[in-house]
Amino acid sequence: PDTPEDEINPNSSTMLYLGLGAIVFVPIFKTTTHLPPYVGMMLSLSVVAVFAEIYSRTQFSMSGVNHAESDAAAHHSPVHHSLSRIEMPSILFFLGILMAVAALESLGELFGFATWLQDNMPLLGTEHGSNISDLVVMLLGIGSAVIDNVPLVAASLGMFSEPMDNPLWHFIAFAAGTGGSMLIIGSAAGVVAMGMERIDFFWYLRKIAWLAFIGFLAGALCFMLMRQILI
Image 1: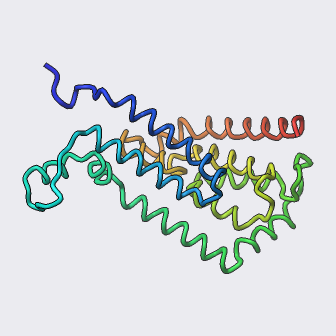
Image 2: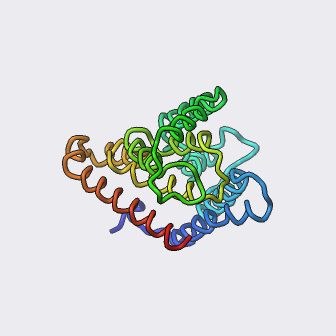
Image 3: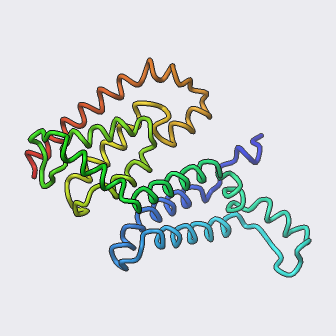
């Protein structure tokens, strides 16, 4: 017979669609209300958490703290269970990196570095609507293989002053996202996979890194070509 862990929850598909809908809801909420995106994300998280508690059918007591059913409900609460699995070291890592990036931006170091790159890096002739060389963006993509792409993109926001609808940001997003795959430590997902699947760093470097590098270059060339044709 199937154990309780093997049984499929009849509400699993509902929670899946609810979670996907909550993700799609965030940009709609931002566009409609013009509030910061984190407000929409927290609202979506709250709705998902409420439905998770409802579907779990747990009971709790607000009057008796030591009530047995209250303790059992707290132990089996899906929200509490999910929160207990959060990796605090990863959160603190991103918090520290983003604070360091904000400090460099406040000191003007990022803008000064961007000015130096703009003055010393030659233009490739494929740029559109920006004086930032595509070579700089590709170097940022290669750098994201060593530095996580989240702080790298955050740093680029403080380095360049182009408007948000400029094609430069599309290229930066592509370069940082795909360039981070050249090394397994280039993204948080890679670090997690290395720990969960016991993937060796040097095995990835020998077997996968060169394929990811070729894919990065091919994608960058296709991106620049499509930008010249479509824009």
